[in-house]
Image (cartoon, rainbow, N blue to C red; front, side, top):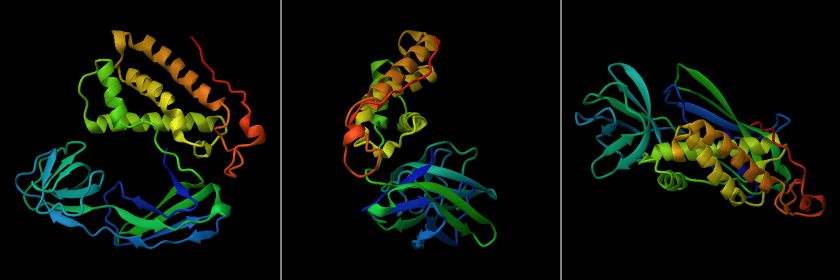
Amino acid sequence: MVEVELQYDASKSVSHWDADGIVATSATATLYAPNGSTVEAPTVTLPTLSTTATAASTTTILTLVSVTGIVRGDHLRITTAGIDYVVEALNVNGTAKTVTLTAALPVTPSNGDVVKSLKMTATVAAVGSAAIGDGYRLAWVYTDGTNPRQVGYAVSVVRWPWVQPCSAADVREIVAEIGGGNRAETWCADVALRVDDMIRGKVMQTGRRPSLYLSSALFSNVARSGIRYELAKRGICLGGQVYEAQRELRFAFDDELATVITGLQTYDSDADGAIAGAESKPILFTIQASR
């Protein structure tokens, strides 16, 4: 679920990288209102980082001439044997000048292979409380001089930004509890992200917006149930009865979610910043399930 949330009273840095490895030489970013009018067009900072690999590189660790400007999570393009590969930085070691990758390359880079950053960034200014709502669009238009691209992101202007209710650390804790062994940080982070997407998607199915809850921390227990459910879907559970665990943990996840959604004083349905009247009363909530 790719959606950008802009807090109405704060500026926000937004970014985009091209999945095909296009290094933009010119780019614009435009925020459009639901009616199609332009809200603002912030200045885009183009990717300029360029370095080269050394002979010490492997398929999983790039040893570079310089790692200045590279941070964890950055997406890079490395060109080896005339083929472009897009990689993501898992860890950056400034002393050793190495970048550990989230996934291995199919070939070992050669000495002198060019590595470039793909990330474009822009800062969207605060838009004011009158703009709170959904249906906005952030459009990136860019080119490397040969290949034009246009990508759009759904945008909501919110009073309270949604914060992911679980993290890789939470996943590691539960994996340890059920004897799931040691898991890579990126693997744990992926589980946490999928659980977050699952929660947000389920909330939106009810006709509610996740960002209108007073705090995403309300969903912390839902997230823990979601982690166990996601792990079961990956074959990791207590007792080894995977299919039974998947069914029971799905019910547990739905129950925890229903507890939050039907609770009192948690949801600002009219986005006015206050919980009052009908908003402080429980709602009817139905989840379809079968045994």
